[in-house]
Length: 248
Length: 332
Picture (cartoon, each protein chain N blue to C red):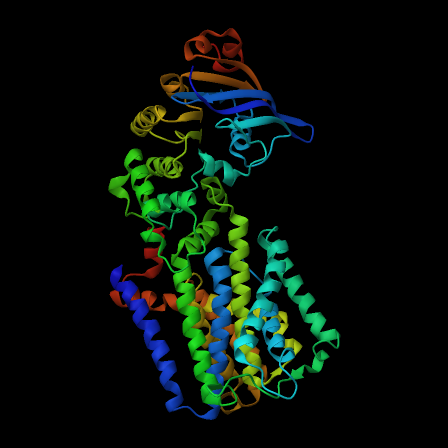
């Protein structure tokens, strides 16, 4: 039995009359990639935002590493081991690639009152940043300004910044968006490497990639889960075929 | 990169050395003027911490300045000199306390709302001293006995006061420069660029912003204290929004995102003001000094988008023959 690191139960989000997420339950386990797929507006991003703590759900319960976390702030969830990446790049373009990761890593060792110490000499954050850059395959460009990276490298940096906070759970919002075939391959290899130590939730539109890497797939339509199963079962599920895969 | 870095410190070292040597040649008028500019420079740096470093556009900095100034006068005994050792910290703490209060509420808003809320709180403070007897009303109050520290420091002496201000200018610069490269300062820089990302990394951004706001208010209070002691006088105009606006212009003129920009901006602003006010140069037109000042500032901002701090870079590129505009596009 794999270890469940993040668990959402009966999560519902209403915006006025619109039900964006409807009683969704989801479990994310260490050592596996759990993909959430669905058409635009299916509620995938809302779900990831709720799980990461951008805003509280209208109803439902969230457990992180076995602790009740529904009312934890986003910052607290991150400190407890939940890293998330964004669909749009949220890197700091004026900082070096290294400093992007070092600053993120600093969240684990916050000492704001030590105003006389140079942050660049903070050993723990420097080490975490270097480790994250190594994992994400960005060590060679770490001195470069983040804004000057290629699109694929920026997406990698986005992941590296998540890794810098040494998370156990990763929520990845379309990490492959806008990537070429080669960049996609590299990213999928990276996710495969990360799988062993992490529980990964992946929201992604690239179906080939999802079926290559996911251990479990949850399909959302109009805010509700219509199926949640292994990729093989999802592929042959008639409901999914009519609702989403278009009979392929 | 290293060369540029040492160049920056060489420049600021020269400025501070020049200011330290200035009393050797200064007239009484010059000494008073430069002391005033140094106080504005401290105040501008306090605002730079919010605007340039954290991305919080505060339009109420004059209130903290004014509170520091009023505290210096109101807490002094009427017929004796107060002791610097407690009067100065008291003025700073009072300003920081008001900043803590204003920040706690205003930091719940963002963007243009934040600008307006900070302005509103500053106007509140302004009208309290303007319309009540508390601070002497519109006439303000005099400080007849300037604070002293035993027989060591007597701020009644203009030169002693000048050096006293100089020490705080240098201290403020070093303090803020170190603060900005520390853990705290890096988080502020992160908040300026992308606050959402900072939260997602595990930083509770609100306490960080509040700490920056309070620190900034305290430093503004220090500047206010110095200003009150310099003139031996406070009035409500020290808290008016005109000053808050002028401070924003100073740091934009000098170059946002650079501490030395705040110092350069304060000097440039006051010198320009004195220049356009001079009736020897402009005759009767000097009455309309604000017009000349305004056009000059518009021209500066248009020609130097990075402020006066960016001037050497622009000149170097001109001299190299390449066009700076193109270079900027490539960088982006």
